[in-house]
Image 1 (cartoon, helix red, strand yellow):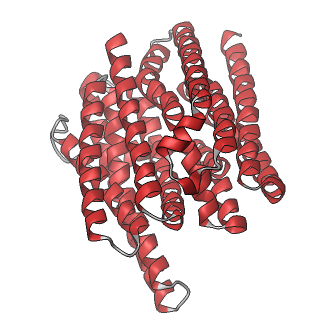
Image 2 (tube, rainbow, N blue to C red; image 1 turned 180 degrees about the vertical axis):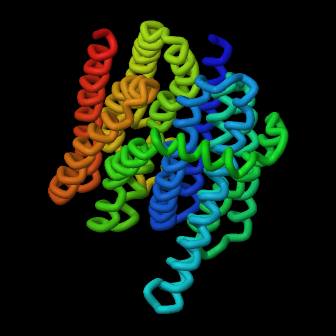
Image 3 (cartoon, rainbow, N blue to C red; image 1 turned 90 degrees about the vertical axis):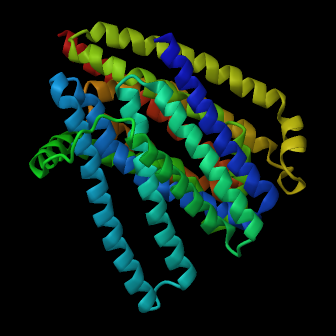
Length: 414
């Protein structure tokens, strides 16, 4: 298990470094407007990816332990094919809608192309996300590391080509490179799986139907969580333009490794907690969750402290002069990621116990607070106010999820 945790940590380090370098690519080689538009596109792709997490990979993680060992491979294959067919159908409908909007002059050509680029990129990202979770699920984190290493190499190769060509809309080509690299890396991972044949349509329908019973509440949760985490970006663009969003996200770059850490640890340990729960060892699942929480909080606090101590050096040596005033944003983002770490454990345990409704209700309360506060605080404090609103929402969500899981434990014990 320690070896798996190490590979999980290495993988998140790789992903964090990749995202950090993408940010530096825009900071040094593109305009603030390009960086802001890329951030908006990335946020929309993150929402679509969350749909896959809610409807496919999280239910797959929870349900796999109840399958006979001989059925598990085909169950996962049916979930993969179901996800791909559903998303291809959705992209087709979306592309037709965008084309009609362009034909009717409701969308200009640049916006229509941007929307279609996001749809294409999201297909590749969903494929990569599926194989990430699948390999964690079969306890093969080294394969996840290999997958993400291939993704990083392909991505930077494509970005280098885009930079040498100096296209007019760099943000659009960067989004295409992101989706293409993710899709190619995901496709390469398929060769390492033992999916023997195309699953029957009846099995696909059955698997998706069973997943929907869990995923419908999770779907509401991820939409609300996305609103909470991304509303600041759209408020900033609305009130201050894309350059203001670029500054806020440049500051966030330094804290991205810590925010990725919780995702990495939960990807490694959540399948193990699910297996303990499936074997009726609820005490063991909770004990493992507490250990992960303690490790996560210590690591997050230590990392955030180091970034804060070194922020002047980081700003002067890593960013360009046009981003020289982002120091206060770094402190604000540090508070956000500490609160995010605090809620990660309760969220994972509630998923293991299939309490998706409780997560959605907690998300709804915290997201409502964030949206209301963002609109008010951004008017008076600009980008700093929007990040502060997000921090308040994360704190509220951590408290609500902790209370929700405490009620679950009381009910199970009773």
